[in-house]
Amino acid sequence: MSAGDNPSSSTTSLQRQESLKPGYDPSLLPDYETPFITDDDLRAFEKALSAPEVEPLVAINDWRPIRQRVRRPFRSRAISNTTNKPPRRTKDETREGFLYTLLKYPFLAT
Image (cartoon, rainbow, N blue to C red; front, side, top):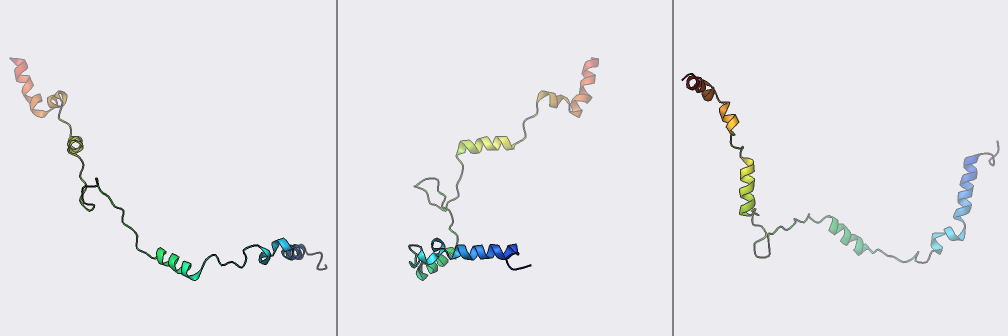
């Protein structure tokens, strides 16, 4: 088996030939020597990445302080309070009570 019979060696030789073509030579590209990023730019980017996270600002409007606790309007608080309470008992639930069951028979007998 000769070197030409090995398929891996033929692909590497093709790659070498393609890399020798003038279109694939990076030094022939138009801004190959231009330094687009300077060391100062990299240091500034590193500094920006290491900066602490920013806390979002939350304000109700322009006239109130930013760090004040935000409260809901009175109407929405009143609605939410009524939804948090259990509903009132209906007439059917009242009739199902123990005392109603105990007291209804003497009234039926009279």
